[in-house]
Length: 129
Length: 388
Ligand SMILES: [Zn+2]
Image (cartoon, rainbow over all chains, first blue to last red; front, side, top):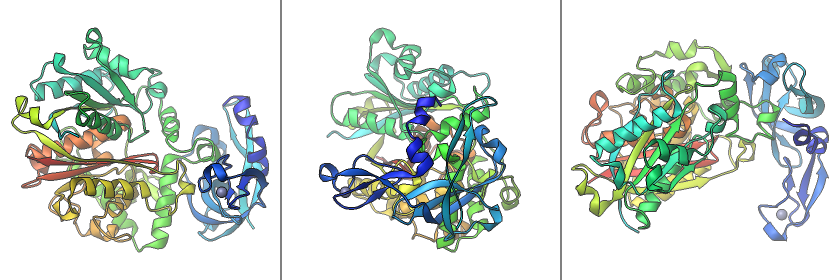
């Protein structure tokens, strides 16, 4: 991944800045610049999410891609944010602790490393609330 | 719109084909299809080729032209188009070819699919496949393909009473069928224990819940139905072609363990063919993971939501069951060269409808269905084919 490809998403990835539609009040994370409900009537503005939510479903990844190897087995989940939208994220906890319905809150963590001397990517993970 | 028929089919064996290059695979499948249709290459008006990721797998783009060239068509300058929709690339290539013939624009059209996956190391293959999901918001945070389907399985098992053994039976049944298919990558039967004791990949999915990495190619030749008898005594009619899309990311779905694109494409196909479920003799579904077959047979409407585990364990999807599913061995045992899979599904159904499926033949097969999925359900193609 080039620096620009990562850098342009820093506000979203680091601080959970998504968007919301001022016409229908629907929230979007990951951010969208076009409201699927209101279409051209929609007015999209940035929105900072509180960073709290509930685990909808999860898995424990045993076979990790190379850039995630230092993490060993990790919990990957779909989280429903309290504002409504769902996102995919890692949950930092003992894998045996993870449960559907568990309350979680966002934290800032290292996500991946591009090779030995490559860029380290940071972003949002979650942990039990 | 004109009626369309399949007049010839060809498929390479599937597996880790160290001695065959991308273009070798395609030429082999194409030649088999031409021979089957007793057709010379000069009759071909156009080609559609399903391919997911030659750019990542062999660092080659511009696949339409490459394939036309090595199929000996460069000097005839026929139109040749690559179609990409991740693992549904083959199904969409078939659909584009059907539309081209049905519209009257072209007469004799090749629909093919090809993938050469073993020329890069497995890590690179896995990473390329992650591109079928949302790279920015799934892949980036550590989602793998088995991981995404594992989250579907977890959601499904939380909502419905399916046991781990019932889920494993999908793989056992598909290996049983694969053992009766001479092109299959794995032609060995397995037991429940093989699945339940295999390495955990992404909880609750184990290695034997996952389809393998495969090289292979398949090709079929289409013609207007009213010209089909010029080429073959056993033309197979295309009764329906349907396609649907959904959110690229799993987290944006209405329901995690229902593929709404499968529901939509299935309903459209049944409506177009004016058929009911009882009239379908067998179906090839997209079992990239065992849970995917469970969702597919429910979302296509062959059994009620939440009951496919028991339905499978009761043998209803086996060769002698109510609705045999994946007689080819499916993606699990026959193999999954991603861009070729949708065409291989058509190839299997044609073999069944012609009565040429050998030890896995369904007696009196008249109508068959194919179901091809891209990603975790962002693209679905469904086709219905019938004996005349
Ligand atoms: Zn709106």
